Length: 179
Image 1 (spheres, rainbow, N blue to C red):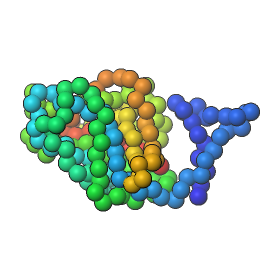
Image 2 (image 1 turned 90 degrees about the vertical axis):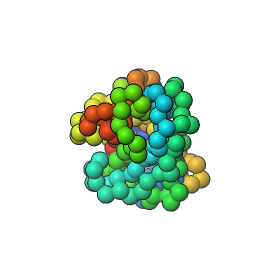
Image 3 (image 1 turned 30 degrees about the vertical axis):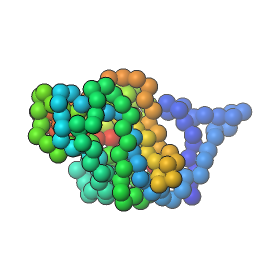
Image 4 (image 1 turned 90 degrees about the horizontal axis):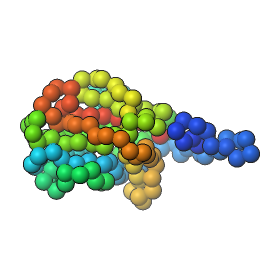
């Protein structure tokens, strides 16, 4: 196991001047991802998440169960996605979470993910389908099969960003992360 310094907003947390550390397990099983999501218009197709390796267009390691857009509201709500087959994530490896839709892109019926525009997560970036990276993060919670949190990118407020919209750049949205 490696050791990791505990930080908040990129600032090490200390006790009597000594950085607090924790042991990082060599791998974690990912079962659940919570994001803050809502729909615009009457979106009724399916939304799903992918975990990829290598890049946001890299190898798909796992795909969540689909969520029917008709079940979403028009206000941001914490929404849980389940990976029926848990994905093994190795410590120290960069992964990419990608939010997708399986329907036709639209300027009227699309989806919106909450974003944190204070960029609190220093081990990853957010980006769009066209490859554009931005200084925001997608608030998310990754949990193992026991529902224990293995990564939490906090929601400190901010705006929303669209995906499944009628432009190539907004077809999907992604967030990189490292355990």
